[in-house]
Image (cartoon, rainbow, N blue to C red; front, side):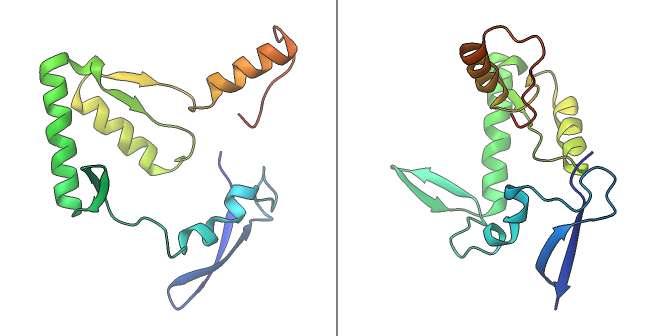
Length: 143
C-alpha cells in the first residue's frame, strides 16, 4: 500500500497536497519527501527533458532521440552479451501502474538481471550489522 494524498488543483495546476485523513494506514500523514513534492515538481531548475552527455557536457535531446538511443544500446548489449548483462532495477518509488508497465516491458524484452528491493537496502543492512551485530529482532522500516 502507498501514501494516501489529497491534492488541491487550481486552474489545472496542483497547488497543495496533504495526507488523506481517510487513508487506512497513513491517516493523513505525509513523510518529509512526499510533503515537499510540489517544491521539487515546480522547481525552475528541475530537469524535464532528456540530456545526453557529449564531450563531458550535458546537451538536451528530444525524447524520440533519447528513446532510440536507449533501445539501440539495450538491443546491442543483449545481442553481444545476453540479457543478463542488462540490469532491470526498480525501487519502491513507483508503486503505481508504472511499476507493472516497467516489469511487463522487461518480461517481454527477455531475460535480464533483476535487483529486488531498493538501492539502499544493502547499505542499510550492512550498517545495522556493523552497528548492532547480527540482527534477530530489529528491522529498518525506512531503508
